[in-house]
Structure formats: structure tokens, C-alpha cells
Image (cartoon, rainbow, N blue to C red):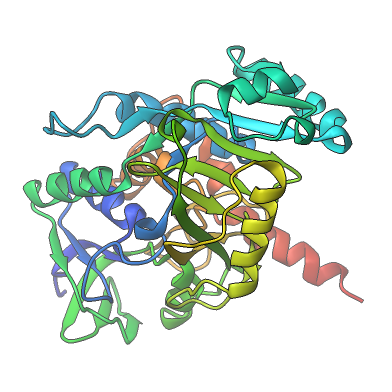
Length: 383
């Protein structure tokens, strides 16, 4: 019987791939991390607005965030000048037509995050002086939110993975994934054999699955546009401002700059996402209508993909049909803030170990089994 080169072969080196590589290598598994681009972290992770809001996403996403927070707050880096988390409250605003929806949302958020505050329009404008008084009827303030230094967190995972013996390779385009008797062969610039393939390929996750003869799960990359503009006096202290019905968000970025987005979710193909002029114009229009900023010039713009499964819950676990194929995909817009918990769960499953008690309730909800069952039910009920 042949022996595989590595226990674990991870395809894709964004935050998911780096975090899982770190967790697996620290458990003593031999790991190779393969990235198709000439640099790591070029797509979704490298283009993220990098904010942590514990109230966003599904119940599963919020629980992953809760479990990840101690790791993120503990500053797992050796840097005295930079921190993974820096406090940045989130201010959710609503006009008169969205006030009822905001109050309903507040009822559910307050159950889990009691420090959240419901504000009047006047109180909201005290937090962000650029808001037009007539555009805010009510607001929700989430004080336990943060700016997240995605680059620093990624570097931390990569450094720890390498220190634990993980092999990392760039410009490794996987062209074939072949199942052998007891392992897998990944063919690219060279051939690598692994006992288990981890699919952490982000927007390309379904395509990587198809290469391995694994049925895709229906991942959908959604393009999001981001714009950088000049800020105004005092803007560095503003919270992240977003609105109902999610037509924009605005956050301080760097020194006296603002990062804006129309909060778009446009279905797209995997690739190098590009901003669209129409979305940029829509974003500026939305921000100008809610604020006194009168933005006319864009300093820079870009776009990234947020990839979701049909139920908008991450997929972490072994494929139910093909042995030795592991999914770590569909992390949506919360992959960076959920990375520590996802890595801990993936590491345990890959090591055939029991996850920690707080992660056990998430094993089934995150398993690809749920999507296979959903697909089977859908096909059986099709006319």
C-alpha cells in the first residue's frame, strides 16, 4: 500500500484554508496548503471590509461568532502596535417606513445581546453627525462590534500553521483531483498525494468538488461592491452605519476616509470580481440621501465575492457520498469573524476527534448532509 505525501491537502488559501491548516497542523497532522494565485489571500478575504457584528447572520453564524470571540479578543499575535479587534459599534438606522421592522429586529437581538440599545433619531445623529435628522426615525446601536484586522489574523494563522510544520504553496493550480484506493492525487505543477482533501476554495468550491468527482452543493458567489471616499472632520470616531432595508453601509477606514458599500448581492461567476459603475453610483446616491456628506469623488473601488449555500449557513464537514472529501465553504460574509470556531471544528473532525462541547450542537447544522437531503427532497417533489 502506498503512503500519501500528506494527511491533509487544503485547496484554497483564504482565511478558511489558513485557519484549518493551523488547526490541523497543531494537532500533529501533516498538511499541505495549495493556492492557485501567485499570492495568498487575494480574493474574498483580502477584499473584505473586515467588520465584526455579532448580531448578523443565521443562528449558526451568530453562535460561531460567539465561540470565536475569546480567541479574537485574546490578541493571538505578537504585535504591540496592531490588534485583531478594535472597537467599532454598529449603528443600524431606519426611516419612518422601516421603524417597525427595526423595533421587531431589536426584540430578537436584545435577547442574546442585552447591551444593544434602541435609539431615537436625535440620539443616532449624536453618534454620527453626518446623518440627516429627517432620514432617521429610530436606530439600533450594537456596542459589541469591532473593526477586524483580517490581514493580521490571516498572518497569525499562517505563521502558526508553518511553525507546526504545514507546507504552503502558491501558484499551484489544481487541474485534476483523482481518487485512488486509499488516498487522493492532486495534480498541478506537480503531483501531491493526500489522505483527505479539504475544499476551502471559496467561490470555486463547487468547481473543486466537480474536479474530485463530488457532486456540487449549489454554492453561489455574490458580488459586493466597496468604495473608498474622503471623510469629514471627526469621522474616524463614527460607528459603522448601515440601514434598513440594507441599501448601504458606511464605516471609517484609515485616516479621514470612509468605506462605503451599496450592500449589493449580485450573483456572479468565480473569478476576479470587478466593481460595477452602476453599483458605485447607487451607493453614493444612497449615502448622500441619508447624510450631509455630498460625496462626488471616489478615491478607489473594488469588489469581492461572498459565497453562500442555499440556506446561508456555512458548510463544514465530510461529504456524505465520497470518502475523504471535506468541505469548508460557503462562509458568506462572516468567514473572517467565524474562522477560529470553524477551524477548531474542522480540526477535530479531520483528526477523528470529538469537538468541544460548545461546538457539538453545530456539527449537524453545518454538515453538507443537510444540503444533500434538501437536494434529494427537491428532486423527489419536482413535477
